[in-house]
Length: 427
Ligand code: AMP
Ligand code: GLY
Image (cartoon, rainbow, N blue to C red):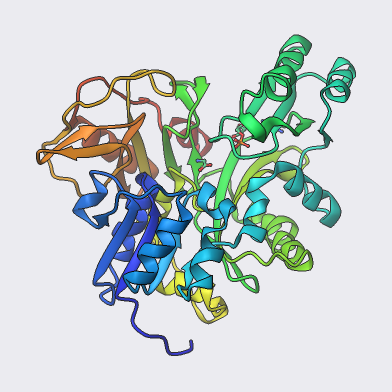
């Protein structure tokens, strides 16, 4: 790799459990002297200097990074990426990990990503796109049911409705296109075929020339045990995903991952950073459910603890297009993360309760907390992620739940079955 100045001062944009996991991993590199987080949170404050700037306030972010001579920035969340945070920082001479806005559109517009997959033959659900509500309503009168209705733009992971009946489908179209439930994000929609099969997340590192998949994982999106209840940002995750065999991984590399990288290049939208593949393993083979232009949350909280290769080195290689020179290794172990949330999440919940730890905070990633008078208080829906690594999945799950028992706050809620489906798959 080309010789670079040491990256002493690193800035991470974002303030959830994902960013905490990234920061803890970046700290392992002795070259890093100081990490800043925008905005970070009360728990991240133990590992980085947190700044009271919104993750979407691009002007203020650039101003801070420029005047504080930041050597490298990691832009983790979707909204600043889609808004062009990387473009703005790079224009001021600050190298970044993350895609520019032209490439972040792969997550920013579902219509873009569906059309990309169609044009380049990447397997995905059949679909139709609509900009006019009357056409969408006519379509749902005759389409196959169940059907999946998706807002085109970003919607905090909530812009997807699986309609089990025609009435639900009609209501979903109206809520998005007429009542604007997801704001401008739902002005255009995708209506797509309902797919079935196990879901797998594969994050990948890419510099636009080389793509290296990370260890696979299985998110648990529903709020309640048994995969019931509302969709959330993710209530827990395990890695690796036992459904994702070597054969399937090879097929995904050939039919999905490399063709997607090449497609973005062909469109003049070279993607550099972490490209997230949300996959469904259907009877017809693996298909893409969604792309994200960033690390997943909570997937990152199990993938990074298993990463052996230095994270900053990989991120630099993505930025400077030298990923082919690296060998990226993962531990041959398993990891489980149980999200402890505020009771009521993802709807209404109370916050401001003190969080205490009997056993310290190693391997705990804090997602929604603030510091007040030296106390750590709950400050969000997803509060923290108890994470443990072990030689087997069973042990990792047991250890993660043991860790949960040592962490206390009023109104804590967590699922009790994280990883159980994966354990059954392995048998
Ligand atoms: P997304 O926010 O795009 O990840 O979608 C949320 C969840 O909806 C996914 O994790 C899937 O479980 C489900 N989903 C999305 N698209 C489809 C589809 N075409 N068929 C079945 N389930 C889907
Ligand atoms: N865990 C799903 C996501 O990050 O979008």
